[in-house]
Length: 214
Image (cartoon, rainbow, N blue to C red; front, top):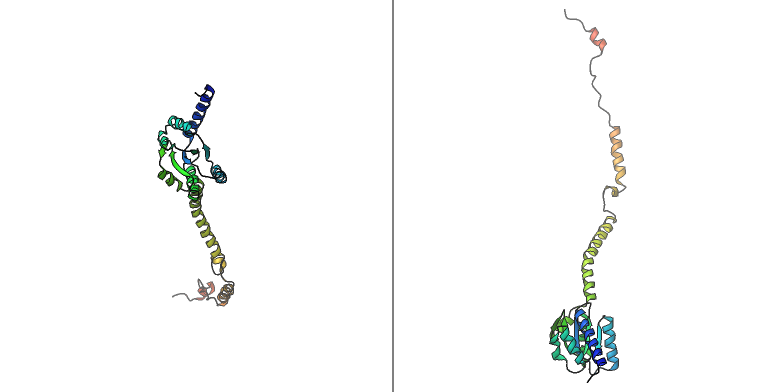
C-alpha cells in the first residue's frame, strides 16, 4: 500500500495537471512510442517554440486529473504511454505542431484533444491543425489592412509623377514661346491711331459772331 507521502505527492500531481487543463485553451494527447531520442528532442523544440507545454504523464494521474477538470471523455484513450501538449494562448498550436510532426514521423500517434473544456475527436484535432497559426492570421490581417493604404500611396505617387511630366500641369507650365506672341499683339494695339473725339460744344467765339434774327 502506498505510503502517505506517496499519496500526497500523487494528489499534488493530479491537482497541478487539473489546474493546467482548466487554464489551457486547448490540448492534445498523443502516444510517442517509437520516436527516437533525436526525434523526441526535435518535437519538444518545435512545441517549445510554439509556446506549447509538453509532458509525459502516467495514465493513472491523467485519469484523476481529467475527471477533476471535467474532461472525462479523454479516459477512453488512456492506453499505452501518453504525452499531453497544452497551450494557454491559442487553440491551434498543440494540434498543429503534433499533427504536422506526425506526417513525417508515423510513430507519433495523436489520440484525442480538447478545446475550451470540451473533448474533441482525432478528426477534429486534425481540423484545428489545418487552421493557420495565430502569427500567420495576424500577418494576413495586417496585410489586408495595409493593402488599401499601399494602393492609395501608389495612386498619389502616380499623380505626382504625371504632374512632373513636361506638357502637363496648369497655366504656370505654358510654353515660353507663347510670351513673345502676346507682346506682339500688345504692340500692334498701341500703334493703331485713336479715333478723333468730336468736340463736346461749339467754341464761344463762333456763337458770338452768328447774326441775330431780325
